[in-house]
Length: 404
Ligand code: ADP
Figure 1 (cartoon, rainbow, N blue to C red):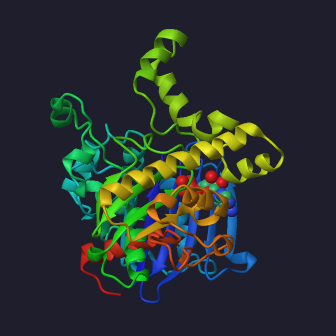
Figure 2: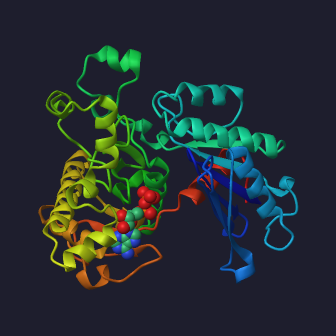
């Protein structure tokens, strides 16, 4: 049973094929710089393959349809490929950014679903059109393969109004759909469910704070398997300090920047999304560079790390109160999985909740889910590598009623 996962960005197309019978990844790849003078395609066949089964080609890729045709050629190639023809694929799962309130669960793609994704474009203006082109191209190239859309926002749809509403005139919610939606839902859902398994409990018995720390970062308070709060907002700009995004700021700063520096709203948006966060404080946005610069004595990098740790710790503190009882705090994504220094600093700020980690164990580099807490910690602390593709594949199968 082969499931193809497609994550279509504005100028990129990421894909992965999973064999759900054997629980293995068959191949994965990335088509980049679609629409630019020169594009790039990286492809890899698993298990970790000899050189001829990895390829990287540079060529102009006019649009998503061209990019997807290249993907089809690669996955059906007699030497490098993993299938003979496109009908060998059981189903396709698409990652879609914004489902607003229209989607509380994944859906099989049909005309109505496509229209509803289009209706969400004003809320996800960069991603939803790209996600739609991925779906439309896949429909054309895999005409008989069922397709499922899985939304980044859907896991957070269980939040109560007191958590998802902004204290703005209520009609802005009713008429303009302004509210907290939250993102990284597939990751939070996967990690929360895996944590429950690790604790030997049903997800309905478990309260978990999931801490997804990557280039973009967000946290979720997950009560008995359901999200009750999350740090990102109407857009992925809100919440903790991120690689290039500011996270939470006083909204009056917009007007102040406009009046004092003459910045347009577009310029302010770029400033907050692309020039802020770590980058704004210390000039680099990659956490590995921040640590390297701290080693060299750079004070701004130390400040960026301190601000990041402080903002994440504050959210965990807030969510501990929201959940009333916390069974586990689970770290995931690039920083969450790999950065023992950030994890140690964050946990050091959680002593009031009885969080105690094993600092030696925390230093070990892990690829598998690993417990980092001491036996007498009141809250378990886990590192669980996220796997959004696997989660999308599982949900795709569930929607289609397939069993591996
Ligand atoms: P994205 O949000 O783009 O999916 P990732 O989840 O891949 O991001 O995370 C990217 C972040 O993870 C970067 O800030 C990177 O520096 C950080 N990261 C990756 N490996 C390490 C590491 N070994 N130590 C610290 N940070 C790391």
